[in-house]
Image (cartoon, rainbow, N blue to C red; front, side, top):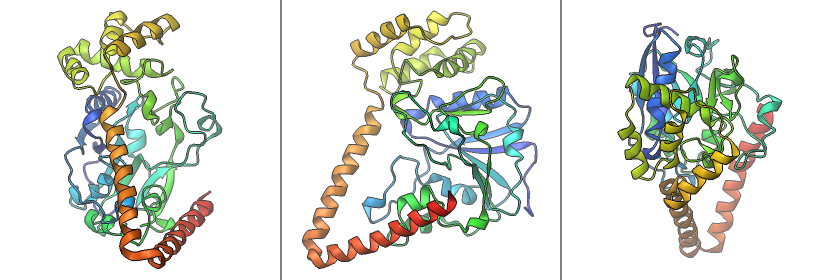
Length: 336
């Protein structure tokens, strides 16, 4: 990079929606607790971007496309890093921040090891794929990234999956698969090894689900924050009242006392789940309502297209999307 920012300051952009705003400061606290770097972290829940005209290629979360705005937000200077909100850090962030680009424009996750592919936890994917949820960006090298134009490309140039999973807007030579698994450890934790855990399975994220095997790590970070005053119980209670956090988390923190928080016992699981059930808590209610609304809108959109354009247009569209899908699948096979 020809124009680095302050090498001892990490510029972190976190993808989040309203339902995850408790997780963002917990992530930030965990980063700062394990490094002497200056940390400048911004939640991207307030970044407003357009949707593609083809709603079938629309965002799946409130922050799906925000990562493409990072170079612009950085003034196309220096390096930055994108993280999802549902993460926690255990090692010095310098290790991740200082990964070399080696002439690439972004650095994303390496091939996943076997332990990431064998998940028996409820809600886990049968097979996980490499992710761009931890992504270092050379913002000067990405001076061609205009998020509005990138989103517009979803109207016929490429699909959502091609963009978000394959980074099809970059050549393979511009992508460095150099983020080690321990710095995007999907639902997996090893003491003294894991640098960053990623609770990627929404249904079992610790703030909405009692029985996550690694959920105690999140609760312990929150307990430390309550102890040092960087978070208050009233903040947690507010998120509970809004329906974004399970009610039992308050009792679990009280039961932990001076800590450290330990994995829950079967008896505790039963008791905490009963609390959440009695309170009528529904995990990620707003997120899933939005997903159902999107699904209905897509069906209505497709029905409208079929009615307006007729069978011939529908066949032509199927052929074009088939070509796009084939190209995306081919690239994924080449990538491994």
